[in-house]
Image 1 (tube, rainbow, N blue to C red):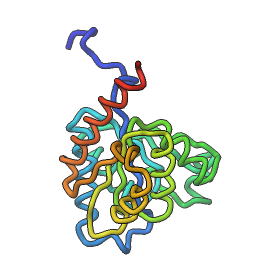
Image 2 (image 1 turned 60 degrees about the vertical axis):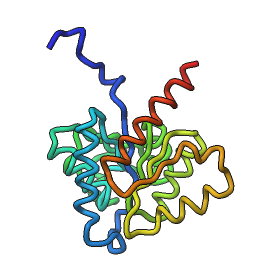
Image 3 (image 1 turned 90 degrees about the horizontal axis):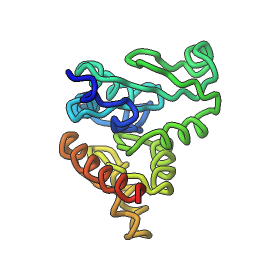
Length: 194
């Protein structure tokens, strides 16, 4: 490959993925869906960002690594020791972990703001927290539909702001959802560059 044709890391689209760490409510196919989303992120030339946690984000990270991609995790902890021993979070499947030291709330802010777009999988209140940050920042958001309630919750929240909801897309298929999100990223980057 010609050295001038190589993409710089800062030009790679960074897809943040938020989802539940406790996955009992996610349904039997959630593992496969999460891993497929991770694989699709890599197939589309993007990089995955997560909260460096368990559950749905970990499954996405597994899919990313299966496809040879790169994961960056944002930890609520200040150190690897705190990450592993206090928060009891894994380091598996992460290429880089940013130890924020800001707890879950501060971690979500840094993780979401570091992403070009956010995809929500099976989730709970923390997933909605990440959604709120991305929505307020007017970032592209994809909502993965499934046997969970996040998609219904987001639709309900969007009823109050039809204009801003144009930056939010829904789909049950990880590949189609990612393609919709990447189109929004193109629009978003064009808008902020003006």
